[in-house]
Length: 437
Image (tube, rainbow, N blue to C red):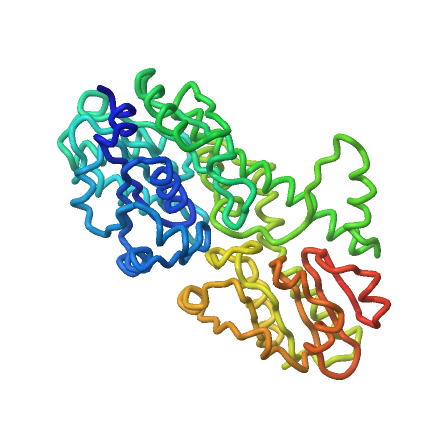
């Protein structure tokens, strides 16, 4: 009997290595479909929260975590009980934008020390083509003393979960799957078909699957960079960018991208994995890195426009009272890692402005640990000279003009609405100086 049949019959277990915004929903979904799941993470504090029925990611919710049959553990010895392993650890970049493979290498090392013979290991982490076979496999072989293709098999299935998105979920997004050989491919496809109702796409090789993932986010990054560049150009022309995009969007084949901050650990990171590998092979990216430069500069651009508009409404720049609403890397998600909002904070500090930051969704402890930032409650935001609406949380979308009025002090109210959440004409009619990308 193969692994797939054993999993379905409850005679084998599946492990999830890495229980963050990607790994935890996968573990919960497999458990929901009747699979015995071991959820492993190095972070003991996170595991304790899961055991108490608390979901720090807010992806599944506390009620789901309380009811799940996932066996949460920080003990790597438990991995020996599983025969199908899914690795969903982050793949960040270093300060010089080179890939930081330490998390995925660490996961490979732990698995190598604790896998049973006959296991299948599938990596989901976003990497450049070749990492699974050329980096991870040798580590697993060295640690386990086993031979890939003989004693264990390897596969790759890139994650496509969109944190904070309640519509596009694991089960509703088509899954790319790949394996080192035809037999492994069929096993991987069969296992994921248990939870992915949208079906699977069988890539012809692991490298093809790795490449497909890394270009998905690179494509989005380039398109958003184009929109950001347009916003800079139209800003100089005195034209409202979103009005232009609304008009252009009436054409059937115009792509509906919008300008904004590009952070997080996918779109703002993945392109660097691809360009790193390209440079190893002697090719220097022209388009991808240009897009990265534009997107990485947008926090500075927003801060500069805040300062220019403060001057325009005759408010002193140094020690100006500025509030930033939103600190996470995207809307309706508590994750602050690689948030480009911090770029705004740093640039404002260059002008002698220490902004007040409020975000009801953000992980306050994480913000303090990663950035040294103390988040305030929205109720504490008062007497401001300017408010930067940085993240399109639904909490902020429900704010009325009257609610916004209560955040300001005397004089002209300056609102910088980065994502264009609010009605520009309504705010201008109410006497606001309104700016958006």
